[in-house]
Length: 163
Image (cartoon, rainbow, N blue to C red; front, top):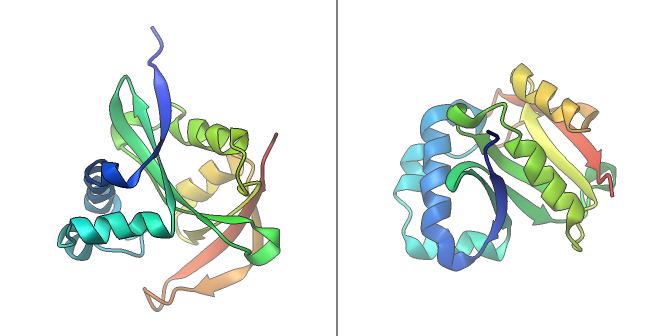
């Protein structure tokens, strides 16, 4: 039997749900993010709620268990991007179950300025680059050095909504 995948656009009062999955992501795949477990685990409720002032957050669940997350920041970005996708992560137990695809389908169906999505991915994260390409992202521009992790480079990628 197929598992039920759902996607939620969460609200600031769900900050603990965001904190839980974000800290899981930083603990399991800290190398993939600009932030650190040490810094973000020390943040209080006010700091977590403040994150919602700049970003929207999606959490995908399998049979009611949170398994993936991302944030969406509305902006006028490079290569025509109308929003920036970040913090993408899925729990290894749920990889290959379509959670990222479900979140991008959700994005495509919203009446928001999310029609051209941009993101940055570390140039050495080959599995993430391949996954984003399967979702319709295309590499754009030159590799760019991280301001948060000097010496590490990211590749910008762009995707246009399919709707």
